[in-house]
Image 1 (cartoon, each protein chain N blue to C red):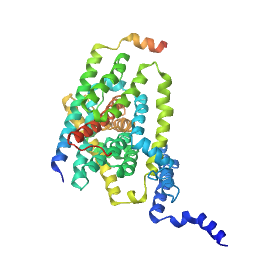
Image 2 (cartoon, helix red, strand yellow):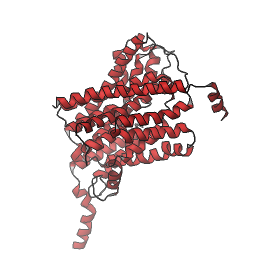
Image 3 (cartoon, rainbow over the protein chains, first blue to last red):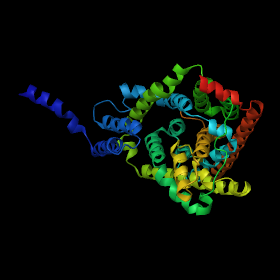
Length: 383
Length: 48
C-alpha cells in the first residue's frame, strides 16, 4: 500500500507544487497562444513565447529559463545573456531590407532620427517614476519599435525586465496601425495630409547599394562601438543581399537563420516569464511607458514632417514623419493608408518605405548611442 | 530622480543620433554623386 501511495504521490507532485502565480502565468501564455493562432497577431513570435510561458511555469519541469542545467536555460545562457540571438536576427533583417528608396532620397533619414525621440523623452519619464538608470534605459528602448534592439539593450542592463520589455516591444510593433493614425490625424490638417509627393521612381546605382552598408557600418561602429554587434550584423546582412554574389547566404539569412533564431528567442523569452518577476505593478508601468514612447516617436516624427513641409515649400507630406519608427513595414503602410484617405491620388508608400528603413537604422543608432553614453558615464553592462 | 543623468542622456542621445544620421545622409549623397545611376544598369538587370 505504501509503495502504491508513493507512486501515486509522485504522479500528482506537479499539481501539489503549482501556485497561483504559475496558474496566472499559464493563463497569460494561453492568451498569447489565442492571439497568435486565432487572431494571427505576430504569430511567429507570440506562439513560441506563449508556449514558452506555459512550459516555464509548470512546476518541477525544469523548463524555465532560470532552471540551471535545463535545455531552455542552455538557450537563455548562450543566446540571450551573450546577446547572440538579437545580433543573429539582425543579419536576417539586413538581408530582408531594401534600402533603395532611402538611398534615392536620403533626406528621409532625418525622419529616422525624429522617430527615436520618444526613446529619450520616455527615459526622462521613467527616471521620474523611480526606475533605476539601467531600468529606465531598458524600458525607454521599447520606443525603438524594434524587438531585437530592445532585447539587446535590456539583456545588457535589466535582465529581470526582459520578458515585459520584449513582449511590450513586439506587441506595440503589431499595434502600430492602431496607435499611430489618431496621432497623425490630430497633428495634421486634411490639407497637409493630402500633400502629393513627387520623385517616387528615382533609382540608385548598385555600387551605391553595395558601398552603403560598408561605409555606414564603419562610421556607425567608430561613433558608437557598444552597438557594433547590432549595426555590424544589420549591415552584413544587407551587404550579402546587395552584393548579388551570395544568394545562398541571403536565402539562409532571411529564411532559415531568422526563423530558427526567432523560435529560440521567443521560446526562451517566454520561459523566462515567471510569475514572481512578471506579476508586478512594474510590468503594467512598463507597458504604459512603452505606449508613451511609441506615441512620442510618432508625435516627434509628424511635427518634424510639418517643419519639413514648410521648409520644402509644401513638397513633403508631414505624415512621412510617422514612418520614421522602426516598425517595418507597418508604419510605412499606415502612412500610405492615411495619405490616401486624405487624397486618393496620394502614393506615399515609396517615400514612406524610405523613411521606415531610415527608422530601422535610426533605432539601432539610438540604442548604440545610448550604450556609448552609458559606458562613458561608467555604467557598464551586467556581468 | 537623477536629473544630470536623464538630461545628459536625453540631450546627448538626440543630438548624437541626429548628427550621425546627418553624416549618413552626407555619405549617401557623396556615393550617389560618385556613382550615379546609369540606364545600362537597368538593362543589365532586366537581361539577367
